[in-house]
Amino acid sequence: MRKKERAQLLEAHEATSSLFPLPPYRRRRGSSKLGGVLRRPRRPRNTERISGSEGRTSLGRSRNFVAVENLRRYWRAAMEELELPLPTEKLAVDPGREGGKRGVAVLVATGSFNPPTYMHLRMFELAKDELQQRGYSVLGGYMSPVNDAYKKKAMQKGFQRTLTVLSRIRNALSKDGLADGGSPNVMLLCGSDLLESFSTPGVWIPDQVRTICKDFGVICIRREGKDVEKIISSSEILNECRDNIISVDEIVPNQISSSRVRECIKKCLSIKYLVCDEVIQYIGEHKLYKEADGSDTRK
Image 1 (tube, rainbow, N blue to C red):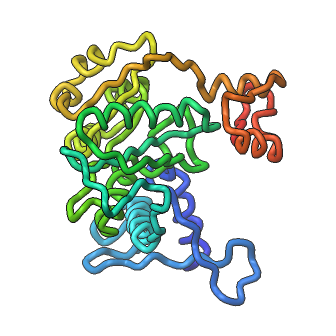
Image 2: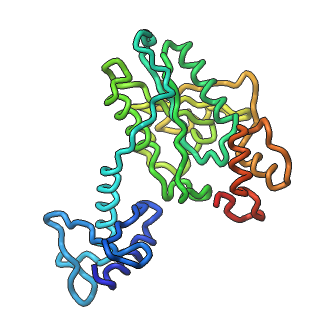
Image 3: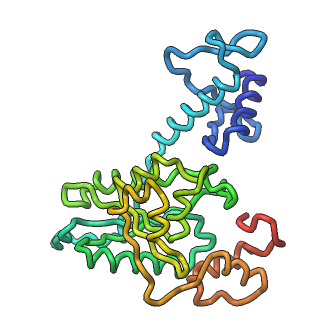
């Protein structure tokens, strides 16, 4: 790839990285430069090359348009090649155990977990109790943290979408035969704040919200002061899928939150019994959340 084209490609990526995060490029052998030489993404058939002095293609499309399309194809190809095994050693899989009347279920919670607290773990227990009472056999749960590009003020930017995570987990479990020949019920576990965000413009793709609710299901832990029924009724999509949304009340309210834990750390207060000891040790070793207010405390 010529230097000019590479600069255009990176410039286009910077403008669209919120939607299409760029995987690391491979480094050619013998390259001593940091990051190596960028390889040109493969150009599929029936697509035009960039030509002309005005930055236009043979079909009149701009250079940036073609660069963005190349980035999309490159990103998709990289994701397809990345086949990481799903950890299953902690799932409650017993070959001799019969499944529940309504089949087996696996819970998946997504978010920043910044840091993970006992409340995050407690949500899994509350959801498990509710599902077991409804006739499900719960195999376990997964916490799927967002990547380093996550920003709270722009939740939809720079991370793998929740629907993709749910689909990958269900496909992996089905492939491993952990659902007695059928597809496991993979459900999104969330709090009422996240459920409410389903209706916030620009945060979620409406069609994906509908697919998550219909094809997977949502189990929501109601936070004190939140009316889950009102949240569902005020959303056309959630109201349409209300049969697949399970609301769970906390008998013992738990107000632990990651933001409050971070605030305690900034004030040099103890966070013991709010998070696991291993988390406390990790935070101390990496000196996290010590920056002044307004800075990124996740570095």
